[in-house]
Image 1 (tube, rainbow, N blue to C red):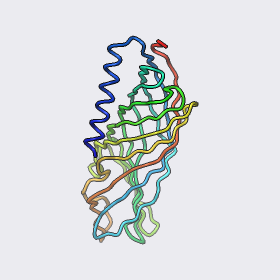
Image 2 (image 1 turned 45 degrees about the horizontal axis):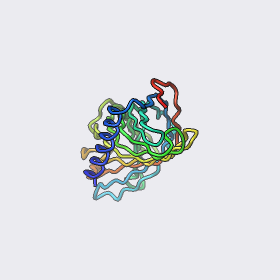
Image 3 (image 1 turned 90 degrees about the horizontal axis):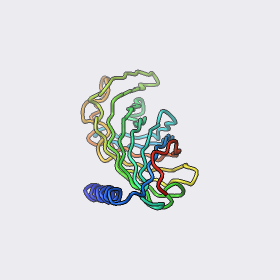
Image 4 (image 1 turned 90 degrees about the vertical axis):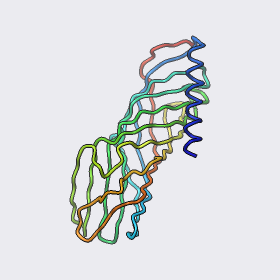
Length: 220
């Protein structure tokens, strides 16, 4: 399944690049984007019977995109995003762990439909976790820590996403991370609790906006 997604995205990107080389009718512009995220995690850390809680993240999730529209119905975009992602995990009745990272993302995606109106977008994004923060609640008592490039999370976090964008730039997005979010290292420093997740899948649903802000080339 992963190979199929990668091949599909590669063919879409190659087709769009070829079209750009053979046609002068290409709109190029930049856009700003932001989103509010509702994320979910599925963690396997036997012998713990873990449970996960939805995580609501209204900030800070923003980015800049560069769009290449080869017609009024097909285009691609790339850019840079900064995104706050993570998960909340209940290890037992007395221990809850909140973990998040700020990620730098580089998307490659295609869009079909009305490229500046109602459209469907799908793509791949390479994300790199650079700032980690953890909060551990033990019987209601909070302990927190933070670090750069922490070895408790995977630094490289590839993902795929799909979204529907309205004519005013509002969108709803689904994103799924292809790798584990957490490493298999011991995650917390709580006596008597061994938290070494063997798998930790992360996905989210978000709403947001993408607003065109600067035209570089207009050929239509």
